[in-house]
Amino acid sequence: MAMQSLRSLLQASITEKPTEIESCLEAFAEYFTRSQLRDLVLEAIEGLTDSKAKLSLAAAQLMKAVMEERGRDMTKVEEIVDGILEQLNSSLEARTEEETLQAMCSLALSNIIAVVPVLLSKPLPWDSSTLALWKAFGTQRNTSLKVVQLLTRFLGKDPLQRGHSGHGHPALVVTCALCEMLSEPLCLEAVQKRFPRLLLAALCHLYWVTEQNAPQKMVVSSQEGAPDSESKSFDPTRCALEVVKLTFAAAVGGVVSHADDLHFWDLLPSSTSFHTWVMDLTDGTTSPVSLAPL
Image (cartoon, rainbow, N blue to C red):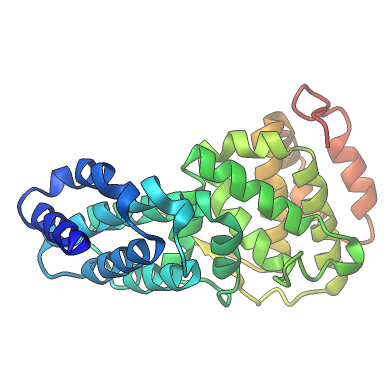
């Protein structure tokens, strides 16, 4: 009976006072069981595509509030992630989409081991919804710190296992995720904290990719450009190279502009001169950031 009353109260908040959803949930969140939390979130996911904009937005706000208050207690996380991805592909209203992405950031923060592998398992090239989620992770400080740490660990496995990261996800997929996250300015701190471990892992992967002679026409990732420019398409080598560039840009920015002037990035993916170019690239880049512990 208590649960039914609580559901009625939440539904009334959604319908009549959507701005009070978070405060309403905070007052009652501790009384939800884990299964009730899951059911509430699944209902909210279904409500994201409600024809009434206010109701769809309220559903997203409710979901975000649940994730923030009790995300650590969520069950069937994989099912929730897949459900959210499916709804994001339905072209949600802008504010609803923003709230939904923030809800996913909160879910990932408290369930990183469950959320990240689900996203990495999606086939390449990723659709716009999956790309939007990775970008969103790069805009939230705490989430970006944890996700970049995990992706760095995946990418930094033994070179003999270079084709796959720790949980069976191709290292190529990990670099695609990093491409999206590291392109966000707010991800700067996460990169600096993992430097130089992230740089070493990215360079090792870049060398592995060049050794494989991956087809240049094989598109694994793409990024939308500015309104007056074309979008970028990345093959495996360019994707790995982009992660190296973004890592340097975040930790030792001057190196990137200097390398650009010398057209260095066009030469780095050559396996015959890779080691020489890496030594030249890293020469003189020591700084408080680059000397951080591995």
